[in-house]
Length: 181
Image (tube, rainbow, N blue to C red; front, side, top):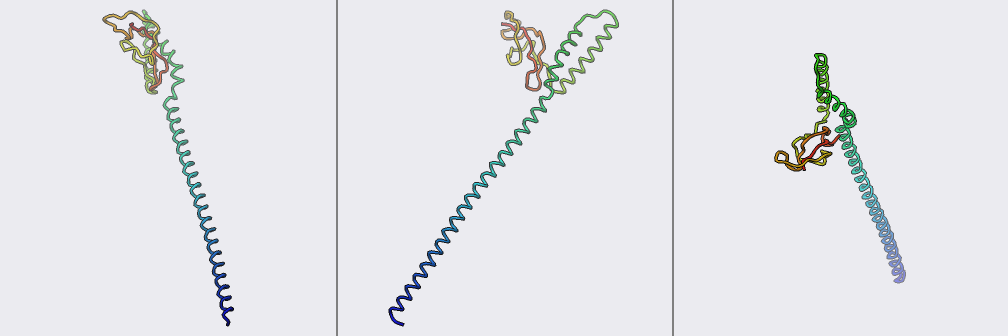
């Protein structure tokens, strides 16, 4: 082989090696690019998954809290409707009786009133303490004021005109009171 042919052959081999190197680097670049794209998609999918999981946990907690509140205050409407009944039974207890039949009737009313109070207590409905207590506008409604004295310091409840009741920490009806001023 002549020198010229040898050089030509070397150039051809070099070109083939360069072409194969270029083809390999192009393929590697494409593979790397595809891997990067897949990693990005995986990260996005994981992020969406974690956000969805957190949202489900939030919804579950919110529903549990709402159910607990509904359970805790389920007696609120019934309690509000029964408060006038208690007031009327207490008025009946304060009436004067003279004959034996009236005494018997009063005893029956007393038993009904006591069982009603017990049932309300079991549901979490309690009377708001008022007489002799410091006035609290969240629990009491002042309908009248009287001058303060040595016996009754200022902002103290002197008399209860209508009892107030609360269900756990909610006021069903504020106490109507007379306050020393």
